[in-house]
Length: 383
Image 1: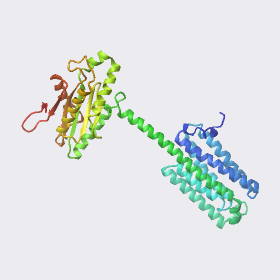
Image 2: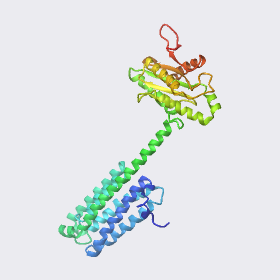
Image 3: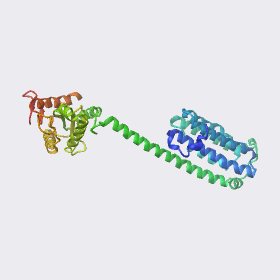
Image 4: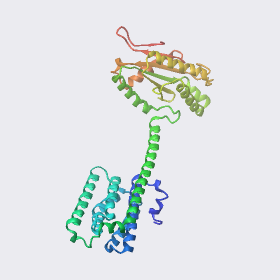
């Protein structure tokens, strides 16, 4: 239970949720403002009726701040703070102050700031309306019904002289409150950015190879279909399968197999030179390369570069009957506006069929799926 959490939050503010931090800042400043207003009222002894009012603000604000740091339903404390500020402390403070030239008028400004911080949407408008009505009613009482006040209103000059130190304190606290909340928002925004980055990485990146994952591939394929419908462009898709990868895993072990997959992705990425060219891990040892705005010749050039890079990199594979190094079989399909009736699965089916033909004919090469023209059927070609 002890020590009080209102003391701990000064050191461990970031350990609390965003809403709790903002509410605690508001309540602690309420307490401080009540304190600096209580001290001159007590020693000057001009406003005897205001002493318990300021002290009540201090104790209530501290107790509410302590409660806000200990409960989970922070919304209840937030609404309680706004309700008490608007409908209890504001009218009582204006009434006891006796004049709009006292710090009570500045508290109205501070209350407006706190409503902006703690309330949203229609609730904020309701509280603003309540502040305006209560303040207007007090001004009417002060100007036209001063006898309703429980003590004589002093002059403007006397009020300004008496409360000058409080005005400075209020101005300082308003500045501190705004700057503290800005710091809270900056810290919260930083954490959100980090969380969004982690979430993006989790939802789009394959944890082993750092290529994009299959889930994100499906989203990109959907977007690519929409892109074909909106613009007169083409889309190249390559499906690459590492040849004899099971033999690699069996011969070298799965740890080396994982390293091999990472190196394969590195090889492929070295052949992609545009930001729009992306590689996705589709399966265990299958990868999809999407080449936006790429014609058939461009897609074939990328496939050839990948095969040449495998040869130059020379990842040793002594268990392969295809070559002494790791190789890949690539199926290619290029889509244009004439393929708008295709589905997302079709975008993968045709390069997959071409890749399967490569597997049957010796591996370590590429094949192109040629779509049917008016004069002939679909075919698979070496280009």
